[in-house]
Length: 304
Image (cartoon, rainbow, N blue to C red; front, side, top):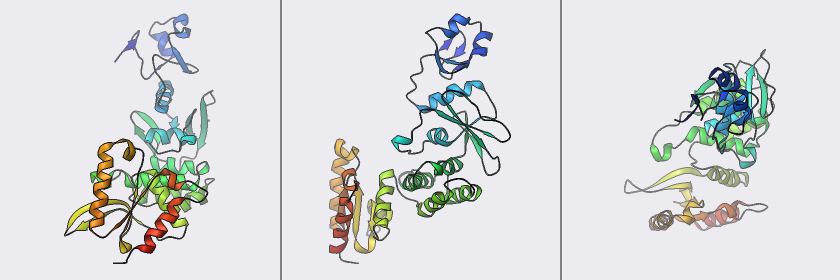
């Protein structure tokens, strides 16, 4: 790890730490150092990741300051919509402490009751379920459901490793944040969260189908034949033998993924399933083609 006169570059240091290390005022204010916040210096950080900004702020070592809201979401790795990715960092304190007032920082004052604080990669941050609740003031219903699905599912359908969060954790957050602005939207989102989706678009597709009055599909459903797995289907209507596969860009650009899509469709067809492939274009408003496509597939499928 490189250093700047004995100071760690990647995480940053305060002006006071720089002076203690022997740096002059000219060095601290010179062009060789970055100044992400007043009183903090870094060297050679590209700041492509919001977490780099958070690490720079952490150089202050203010023990009661906690990353929250959108910054906590980025630290936890939430699948935020692009428009919600923050440019400023969000820092919270618990009352009666006063939140920071600084350019590049959005300060929040929180009630200690109902909040959990955890450490993620050395950063003090509100727990994932509390962060999810905090976002209910700014995120729409659908995005809250996307994040909720992501939290309770993780990668388990593929890896068989259970997620670190469960519905009980989200339920705790809903109950403890009952007076938060946006709580009604949060409660509705909690009721709509499901275990199973492996991508935000799978969640959005499920919500689209259900909102249009179609039956709720099974998620990442395993089709079996003679006790052996034929395929794991993104969304399925088993009683109608209709399989819906959402194809992201990787299915178009990766040859092996493309070939596997064809092979999976053939295996499912041999088992009597009607397979529907959908892409992002099929979900676009005002009248998503996905609805008509799925309705037609259900209408022509024979119940088991």
